[in-house]
Image (cartoon, rainbow, N blue to C red; front, side, top):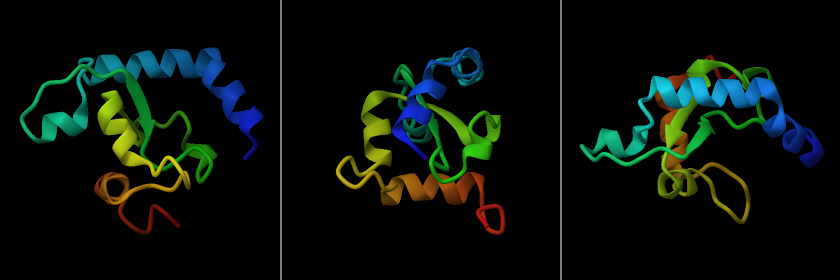
Length: 101
């Protein structure tokens, strides 16, 4: 997937509306922090299975979670772009095999 495609997608009205819907669903709170009894404001909507791996899930509500910036940065290796162990935990939590196939 090209960077231009992703850039255009994140500026699209469909994404902007879906992002707001997910933030509302999660009460504008970080789902990762919530797992540990913390309350942090969510600022990002994260694709659990990354957009470049499964573009067909780009607007699927089951693939989207609200996160604070700190937690979102912990989901990705910012050098390689790959999911971290924490990111993979979310994939396994919401999309166990064979969903990933």
